[in-house]
Image (cartoon, rainbow, N blue to C red; front, top):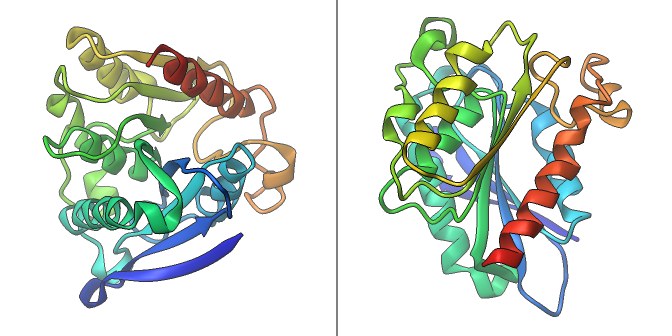
Length: 240
C-alpha cells in the first residue's frame, strides 16, 4: 500500500491523505470525514477506518479539513469538494472507479459528509453516516456556524447508510438521525438505518481492536455497522 498526503489548501492547512492499494483493476473508493468537534480530527475515525475499508478492496482517502484556529464549516465543505475533484481527476493514477466513489462521515464529519452528498454537483455515489450531527444544535459547542443538512435532501441525494446508538447523548436520535431519515424517506431516497440499542457516541469501528486507542470505547453489537454497511454496498452494486 502506498500512503501519501497532498495539500488541498495551504492557507488553511487542508489536505488529503491517500491510502492506495496496488491493483490491476479500478477499485471502489471511500472518502473519509472524521469527527472531533472541529477541535481536532479524531484519529479513531481516520487511518483505522481507511485500513478497514482497504481490507474490503476499497481505495481510501482521508480529508484533513481545517480545525482548531482554522476551523470553519464552510472551509471544511470546500476541502471536501476539492478532495473529490482531485480524486476524480486522478482516478486512473489512484486506480479508483469514480462511478463507485462514496463518502463516510462520523459525528461532525457526518454533517459535512451529508452536506457534500447533497450538493448539486456532488461526485459521491453513496453516503455512510455514523452518529452524525444533522441539525445546528452543537454549533455553539463546536464554535462554527453550520446548517440543518436534512433541509438539503432531495430526490437526487445518493443512497445513504446511516447508523447510531439510541443511548447517544451527544447527537440524540430524535434530534439528528431521525430528522435525516425522515427527509430521506420523504424524498424517496434509498437508505438503510441502524439504531443500535447500545454504543453511545464516538465509537468509530467500535470493536475491541480499536478500543485500545479509543478510550476503551467498544460495543461488539454496534461494531456490526461495518459488515452491514459493506453488505449494503454490495447489494446496491448488484442492483446497479
